[in-house]
Image (cartoon, rainbow, N blue to C red; front, side):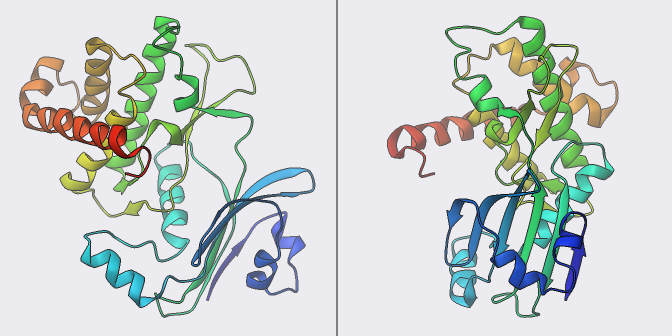
Length: 273
């Protein structure tokens, strides 16, 4: 069994079975599946998000593997990703409680509790009207640069998100947002994978998802190139944009095709990608 508790849960659950206590938490339920429950709760006036994993069974695991999907077996992979991002300076969630028990991966009981990031707005919502009402150019450039930096840092740390969309970048709104003063945090890491180094396949999947999620917000070709330079220059030192475009020509062509395919599926099936 693994158990890590910080305040307020360290005191709140003192002398109690944490796995029973977490199941008793009440609040707004965001997702309720047979094997996973996600809710928002409040303790002493502060908000927390709770994800409980109860095991998905061998049938679901085999089904995922047969369809080339990696199943989410528990809460620990999110905790590992959060800790890895903290190590490399990528703002994310703060875990205040984690537990896992059971050796059988199909039936493991685990949970993670993170502090609510509030007040915030997702980049998806923040950019919703950019086509009709473009933001200040300096702010848009600063946000693009920060997303590029965060994504590049995440990948260089060996973490791939697997749901790398702009809706999972939260913009903090506790003070006025300006090009020179803002903060983004990366959330929803329950599917994230952490390795010593990321493979090209998983890196490219994240980049394609991110590009697809930004197709409708009115980015110009210069905006896209700004992201490309910011993402790759950090990894390759002082490489010029021209050099990056030459070295990554195959990837950039693939990203255009992949994002277009995802967008076509979205138009056809809605959000059921």
